[in-house]
Image (cartoon, rainbow, N blue to C red; front, side, top):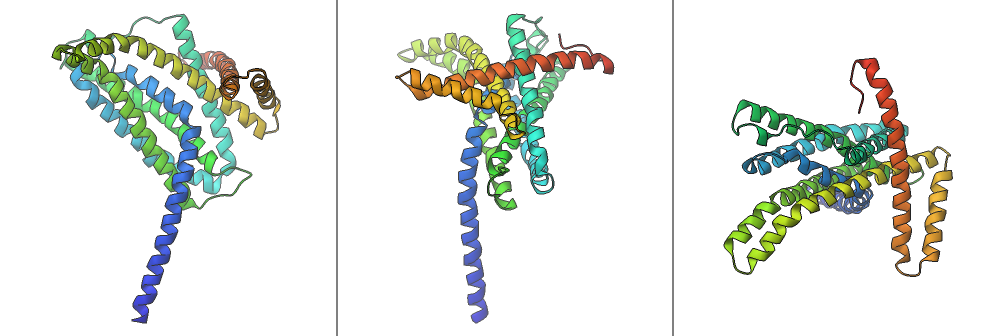
Length: 322
């Protein structure tokens, strides 16, 4: 009997530890998810282009395949890698973040360039007969490209989450807590992003259905159909700004960690000056100033990275970026 009671005591103690771990993981995951918000916005803005030109009946299945690939990226590959880094090479987290920051800046710069100098339209599934091998091949290429892009964005999300919960100058949570936080962040962000993408890409179909039903829903449906193209363009612009903002912010903060804190202090001082000068919604204008300044740094870093990539690519027999 005493052995049973001792076992029950152990179970209760383990349950308390588990509950505390879950509470800690939930709090840490919320903080880490907020830090990765910029990349989440960009991920949601980038993904719809992978189903542009696809048959409407294939949109949701394609998004589902990309979402599964995203979960695999985060939970099978990146989560164990992040825990190994945290355990054996925590010093490597900041350099990896900086590489990710340069990549985000590079991608953002490329998008700005494409907005200013539009590229030739690519062939889509709409240009070939649905159900043919050519259409299936294009679909596979879209899915593979989306999952590759997601891997980079997911790696940056997980690195930001890991850096948030394991600050170099702060308390370090248990490895179990770190794993739980990264898993929660990975699951939550994946469902958030691809749930939003599914709603976005099917919104025009919902609008057509509402318009066809007639009655008071018809004007709303027509407005939804007409409003989606400009909304997608706006989302693309917001995603580009978010990518530059996050990339620039990562680089600025990482430089400060290595002792080059001039840019970070300058942006902070300018933001505070704006806060003091604007009496209405001063907090918002201060945040916007800092965000735009980080985006400008990201744009400059992206331009430099583009030049470097353009010089390096020919060495490997690849075409230049532009």
